[in-house]
Image 1 (tube, one colour):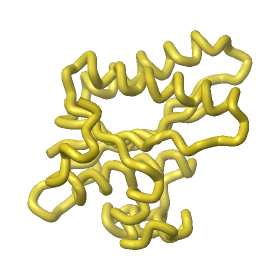
Image 2 (cartoon, helix red, strand yellow; image 1 turned 90 degrees about the horizontal axis):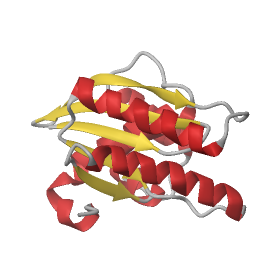
Image 3 (cartoon, one colour; image 1 turned 180 degrees about the horizontal axis):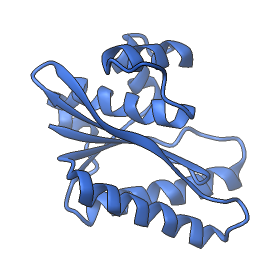
Image 4 (cartoon, rainbow, N blue to C red; image 1 turned 120 degrees about the vertical axis):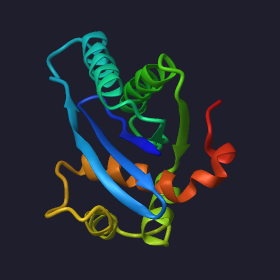
Length: 164
């Protein structure tokens, strides 16, 4: 199964693409889609959407796993990040992909085995499970890979996390 993990944001969208066969992981690609804060929000959303469409076309994931929006005290920021999350979901929907969502707590539980794990613990587990030389940067990229790994570990319970 090829999984596209996404950590949504407006300035940085982390993505990680992994193959999960049996109990083994293979890293396919990972990185960040970035947008300039000087751009209009609509243009930033288009950059995110177009970039994800291209990633999906090139790598042909079977599913998308996306992190749920973490509640932010700044309502304006939460709304804009919600817009970015929406275009990420739309990009996958346009390819008729199954889309699964996970809370930060579920991701930590799926990676480390403890829902209150520190970010550093999650990053080290991502590096270890994917046999990477270093922790992917920026943090959004490591988070996206963690979401993908979480789905691999939780996929058999897919109906619980699916948006469809």
